[in-house]
Image 1 (cartoon, protein in one colour):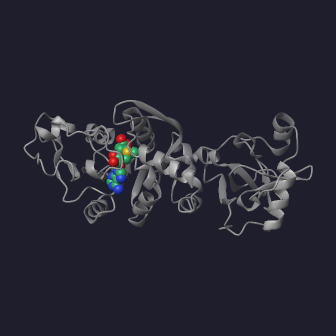
Image 2: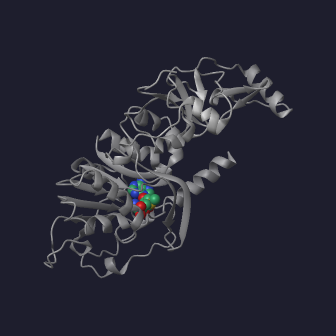
Image 3: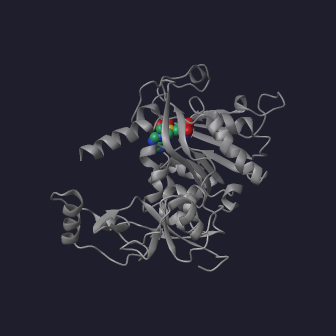
Length: 367
Ligand SMILES: C[S@@+](CC[C@H](N)C(=O)[O-])C[C@H]1O[C@@H](n2cnc3c(N)ncnc32)[C@H](O)[C@@H]1O
């Protein structure tokens, strides 16, 4: 319980992490390289944003002409509604604007729109944004922002970390194209994994540690973040170069692949050691998704407690879980064997790390 509170507190703090301009630029460049017209004539909505603090609006405003956008809309969340308010003052931009309203400044969200060169300087950029207060606080779940979502073709943002699942469901129910930042661990959520399995969503191009800007302008690095998207990109169609099973054993692992006790699959603890000629199911780390090519592999399921994909060949009883714990740790306890793939080594049952179960789509040479 204490841990759950700590995690929630951390997530709430992370809700105010802002994305760096070059991280947005590097990722978007990959989609444009793959399809230069990816954003042509589209309405992009950047919810959970705020051009005064965030770089998403700046980036898309600066590239409005290059991407041939139809309209850019971004909305911000009211300062008083934020769970973490420290460092948020009304900016000079807002105070000096004729739209400034003393009553609304902290309790209303804002909407920024961009459609044309308003300033007449022959280019479209951040200075051409129109803005006004929203009627509500800019919560993405509000009717007002939902309406904007429905009007948009594409949703892009780094959503509040603590509301990731809800935010993703909000996009999916509206059937939009999207690109959002999140933590890689979200892959294993039961609300997220089915979308990946069914190829309705995949990982973006650049995953790993990323540095964010906090409201006090200091930086914070978070490991293991990735983009989730349904935009096509080139990396996703590049085959992963692999060795045959015999080569992996000879040059890398020096031993046969082990089979799980509770799944009809082999344990492959490193993505680079996925054997190119294995016909059956293989359990691989979640970082595999960073290399996943849907023409090369099929995702069958995941090692998880609920057996959502009917893949378990064995369900352990409470007595077996207790016995396994005593054997492994030499004291009383329960080893939750049903939560993962299990391998027996010299009579001791071992849970392996989180695994995704995959299969080759086509095998060139028979096993
Ligand atoms: C992780 S920050 C990212 C900000 C910006 N998109 C960026 O990447 O630079 C998430 C933002 O969503 C806002 N937010 C939190 N809860 C929200 C909600 N229910 N509706 C809309 N925005 C929310 C937070 O205040 C924060 O500004």
